[in-house]
Amino acid sequence: MARSRIAVRIRTLVDKDVFHACTLCRPSAEGEHRLSEAAGSLRAGYDVATVRVGGRVNVNTPADVERAGELVRGE
Image 1 (tube, rainbow, N blue to C red):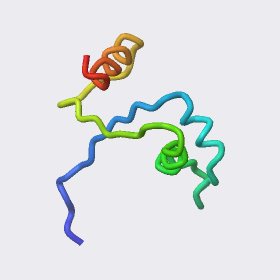
Image 2: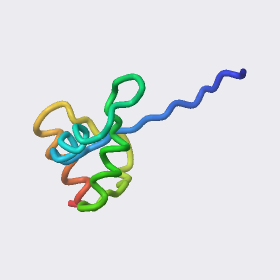
Image 3: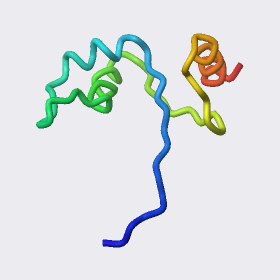
Image 4: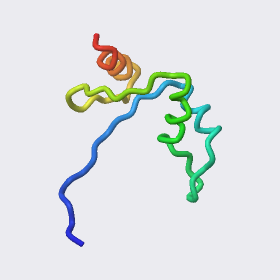
């Protein structure tokens, strides 16, 4: 099999409700809760969307998180 030089880079911002949704989902065979399944269960009552913010956005500090939220909201 040929090796790829392509890497997937993604950051996910989620509402605190996703953590509760994770507990409602059945763990995978590896014992992990999958974010994709939790997001799927939230679609029934929440808007779920992908937002391109044009580059890397750190979320290491409270100020970073605030700035990321502004970018997602288009501010």
